[in-house]
Image (tube, rainbow over all chains, first blue to last red; front, top):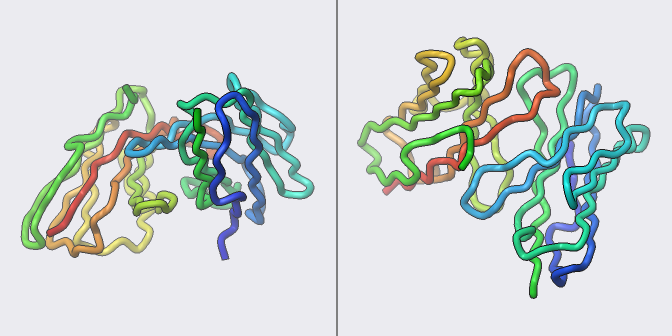
Length: 113
Length: 114
């Protein structure tokens, strides 16, 4: 069973609207959680990294939240743009496994005009 | 442009060929990674080098052979690949030492095995 589950699998939103992506994990002991954006045919690009003590972190129009007690994270996209169309991947690492990262399956976001 | 450069961008090879993928970074990062990514799937870890030494091999078949000639370069030598090895091969780097450093990914090499 995957230790990082993302939802929804995909979504379509209108340009200018907001959306929220979810990530639930069971990775333990927890080290950090990161969100990546991956455009089609490109490598993933880091959006945020959060450790246990951080509840929220922003990067422009992207805001990530973390609840380490419930092992849940969300990524909120504000005022979406066409360039936000991409796959968003949640990645969690453990303090027990240096160099290894548990990847979620990603949420495919399509922003339409 | 990404800070991790991968060449070539595309590679088509037969099952009997020998080829190499190359990855280069000049950020002073001491950890470098190879991932394999199939369409609509997340990246799968293959190898990790730390300070130019192989630290992690995720039970990758021997037809894939990694090499880290120096702290800036990472190669992946390919030989006798199978059609199911067709995928996007991503290289990444991080400062190393701690797991809380961001990984910087290249844009990958799209590999097709005939």
